Amino acid sequence: MKETIHGFSTEDLMKMDVTALRAMLHERTHHKIEVLLYRILKGKMKKPPNLGYEAELLLNIWKRRGLPVNTPDIQWCIKYIELANKLNSGEIVRLNTELLKPFTSLEMKTVKKLLYTRQSIRQFTSKHVPDEMIREILQAGLMAPQGCNIGSTRFIVLRDPEEWKLVRSDIPIENGVIILICQDLKTYNVLKFDELVPQNLYYDAAAAADHMCLMAHALGLGACWLTHGVETQKKIQEYFNQPETFVTRCHIIVGWPDEAPIKSAKMSIDDVIITPKNTNKTP
Ligand SMILES: Cc1cc2nc3c(=O)[nH]c(=O)nc-3n(C[C@H](O)[C@H](O)[C@H](O)COP(=O)(O)O)c2cc1C
Image 1 (cartoon, rainbow, N blue to C red):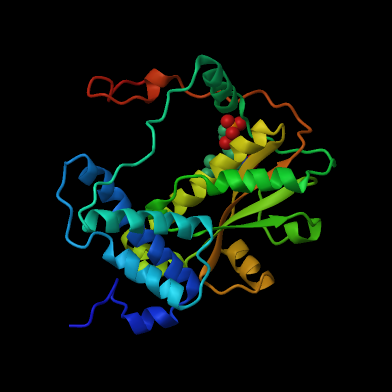
Image 2: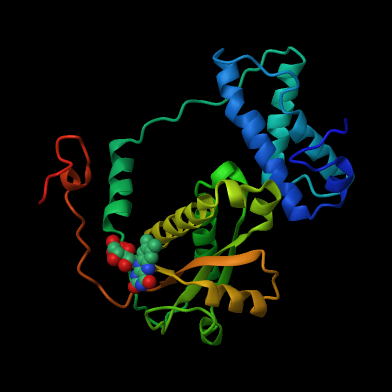
């Protein structure tokens, strides 16, 4: 029988859209090496025969197609495939990684300042937001957790007020920058994860947006998360000449704050922790 990965033969993979192939390589490395490796190294599970062979096959196809291997994500896959191969050949694998250290009390102060003083800002001055700051914000978005490590997140930065009209917003935007958090659905579709875990797409975008708002706040900028629907998705697809598999999911507005809102107050922690005892409690 011919070997297939997610139902795709080698011939299919040689012709496959590069974004989809890259997603498969990420996913097979994640599910078939990364999440197993540490349990194997701890002796909690037996190494499956040919650990990571699917990821290696995909990497070989990637290389045969002459695609770049020097990007951080592909280097990450290569590192795991090499570790898997070491284990397959009976070598003892020792990682030169260290357990993460808890934050110092000074670092905790900064973390709490970041998390507890962030607030949604909706009005901005006309002062220019430097590109470097926007890049910091995008980088923070990219660092967010993402379902199955597939890598579907894409960004569009809109600086031109004319382009802002493409995006449905329930508040008028006068200054600042709009950042669209988009997704290339080819990554999900190829794995059928759009059927298996469609919710992950929304979570991916949410996690990215939150990281970005926090980074904006740390940079002294203000930001607010906003949602939009299918109408905006269609307009963005058309304007940026993208296929239906490219969707914008939500957006944030970022700029130099021109308002100092009263900080939103949340419910008390005891009111939101559900236990069998307080289930029927009405505040
Ligand atoms: C999923 C989501 C959708 C949101 N949509 C909007 C929106 O459409 N318009 C808006 O002004 N703010 C929007 N916000 C911001 C919230 O109103 C804001 O986070 C909330 O009021 C709490 O205030 P804070 O961010 O200052 O803590 C949204 C936030 C989230 C997480």
